[in-house]
Image 1 (cartoon, rainbow, N blue to C red):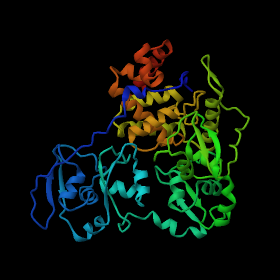
Image 2: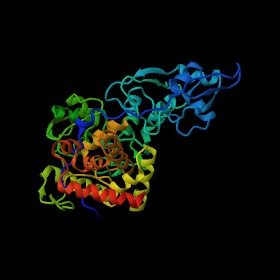
Image 3: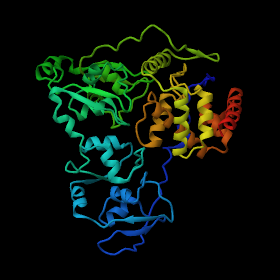
Image 4: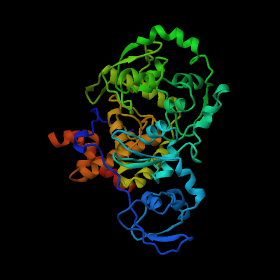
Length: 449
């Protein structure tokens, strides 16, 4: 296993601002067809696929299907698209939809939850790419419950006897619980999840019924004395869902009690009021899987405790093999426009493609991303990333690399910034160990090139 960073990685938020916006290819129409038949349009800079669909009275999904577009956001200048004329059957679902202007901090999952629809439906209605990236000021079409994609409410219709649910990419336990009319604590208990309420795409969850004792009226009455809640100090690596699960309450309750935004963002050292049972967080097991020092540097107990908790979770969740992780890194880099040799070299240097790796600085997984950098990466890709999830961990690391390559003076500086932090590199130059790190990564690039 290669050496891990001896410093908590900040990866320079200040140096990159609010994050890179993905440049989406656009199309403009040049009609050659006749009424009643599909028309051909030649792609050029200007309009989006969504605006083409709106002006021609059809849908992005129909254009994508008729042209076999694997990714509706990726078209090239000069490409000829076949655009079908509007059909009454296709136009009917759109009438039930509404328009929504994206605000700063919004994610597709949050927007979908607020409008009673699904991420998949919003993605399909707006021709978004697989990362469901949106930007502030963008106008989205929100499909209504009458549309064919609004299948999410169905599970909530039969919660009385419980059921099962297959986790989709981007799901969180809080979102799953909300869609099924239950609580995070109930889903955690029913599935034996850990304190972080970690789930992965493809996992099958047991969804307890809405008539379970937890939400019943008598229970609410007995819980009333604890309504004032308990005080909790956020530790490094904490999430609102994990805190809620440990205290037997819900994400929504913690958010409401503390006036948090839609992203439920918290920071280490912040004081939260935790409504509900008010039980004290469970103490971490005594076994230390991750030490508190590296390369002569000692880390705080809060950071090391979080690192050990993450290490235990990764070991218990059955991480992919090193070969599988290497393949994920290469494929993700290609999809996100990053040199696969660079991404693989960094992953090898950071963890040796070992997704169970956690450093004393709480750098997590294959790409060794610390939680604060994970939040930055989430902003870069436009959705919340779970660093314990193998796919999300790779996306986070590659997104950070992409941003650093774009904003650094040269490749060695970008590599150094991944390890030392862009702000530190600009202020102090490369430290001696950073220079060795850069040299190692550049040597490894020749192996993966």
